[in-house]
Image 1: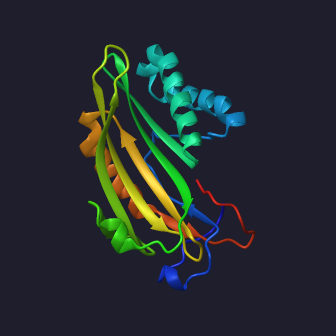
Image 2: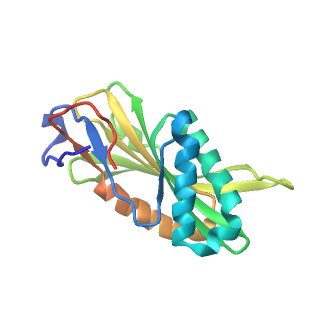
Length: 203
């Protein structure tokens, strides 16, 4: 969707009809709607393998990973999903960025930041940044697999909504680089306004 960010206090702005944010080259953007997901994954895999031939032997694994992440993101209500896939020895290291919009009445930045978060300044407004580590059963022989998550909570101007921009990865060695990537991505997040109306996602 077209549109330019509007400077100033978000509380004084009309309801936004879209958003945009940027990620570095190499991230794969998926259409996670069930009727489009398989084709989107195939297209993303072809592109990533052409960019990184070392991933060719892991092509089937990469496709399964993207399909699984896409399906999970859809179940979580994601509007936009971007994935990073890099060869890591005999496996594929992954990270995911999702954008979910949720209905929230009277969102309070201070309250949202109390549980381990902090308030950060974006180009147009303030938001809440969170970071946590969770664990889940590891596939195969058992044990637990740790995953680091970074999240930005951004109140939607003029509406009782909050955008949740989340990055997650189970690949510990990548966490320092991904944290810097997330913070850089967060600084590009902005609302957009257009004359044509109601589309809610922007690449």
